[in-house]
Amino acid sequence: MTPYNGNLHFRPLALIFPLVFTVLGVTSARAADASKPTAFDGYTKSGFEHYYSLEYDKAVADFQKAIEASPEDARG
Image (spheres, one colour):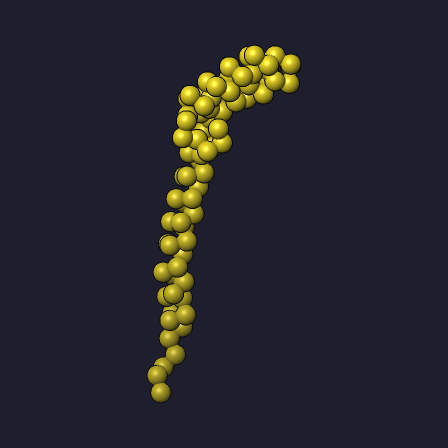
């Protein structure tokens, strides 16, 4: 019969915790980059402000600038 070793139960957890914290760190870093305002965001916000103020020509111009600033952005 093998003697009981209480540390055997904690070894898998010791391997899992660093992995979990690494994944959380990478995810939070990506989220921080995604939350940075861009030129696209600024022009879009300005465009909606003009739109709701019934300044349609200025709104269209801002929306076009937003698309030009970031043509690969899926929101545009």
